[in-house]
Length: 433
Image 1 (cartoon, rainbow, N blue to C red):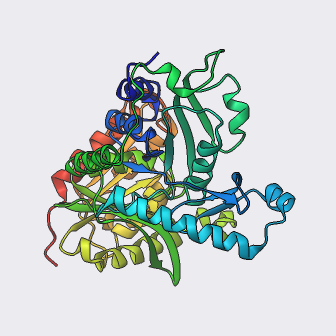
Image 2: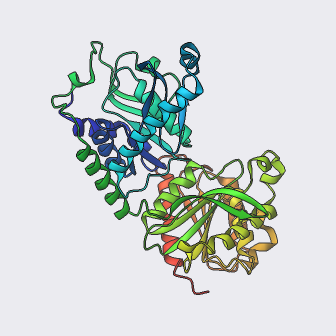
Image 3: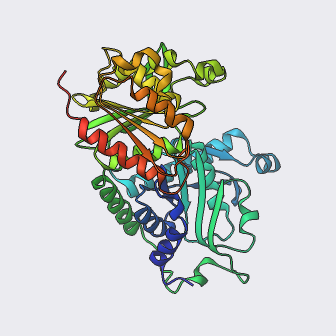
């Protein structure tokens, strides 16, 4: 069915094309799954990493899995097997210590100086060259979940007919090119199923890291952060590509968060153009429970103002101009904050925003402002036209034909990304403050 793992990966990538543009990380299962995953990552312009899994075997019956461990200290246990075997905590600890030493040695060998790709908050695409029993794939999905993946897609070229039943609910989505009726082993469906050695795994990872770095998709400045604002710590993610010309802080709309797929899509497009991005929550989880906070523009703007101060103190952002990208009520917060003399953003972009909620603050905005509205969103379009008339700064209203409020129609979010990219690259230059 497949010539080799490269062809399998290319065909699998074609099936996964719908994921392009999302905030992805492709995780290959060493060793055979890594060449397949490398082809997927290359085709989808996504970062590649490995998902290292070590089974925790019962002390006197190693083939019986008590659970599995992964990097970052992650451990998942099968409580039913633990109870049935009567394994003590001390025995489990000894088994885990032994397996973790092996895992750490393999991680050091495979990655070398390459840092693990962050998984938290992203869509993790777990890839292997095929599924037989499914035990390793299930463990890998659980490891990715424990590392904070927002969504897990398990993708393989071939699997048995009962593929879905075997994997249970460990993945949010299962993708398989074929589930042949007569299945005995993964290798029977490859013309070339030669064993993959460590050197090939290392080569795949290094090549992928070099490609993604050159594309501006990843950098040492890609990290989870806690933004200090309004006396609380807000969770976020700061990504600053090497040679960045500016950084854009995202203010999400009502009912959304730093995990907003639309904001992440736009952020990825900005990073490809050499711009850094800060995606963060404007409210804590407890605060989001009170719906009045979600629509308190003054509160949200204050958080963005404080976050701007925090952002400018980060070493990788020093000397870079800061811009705001706001969506829905987040756009009102961005414009409200932009009217504050202390923030001085270099540019503001609103997507499907409610700039009218910034009220009397609009005439005080000095940053060049781009208002993007869907052509099939008439009420918001009228509100933006009215708000534009109150702006005294450089401004423009861009209408995306056929787009509704959430820009869910094919190609409309790409249009938003291009408009925002051009506006920010035109107006964000190194700051001198």
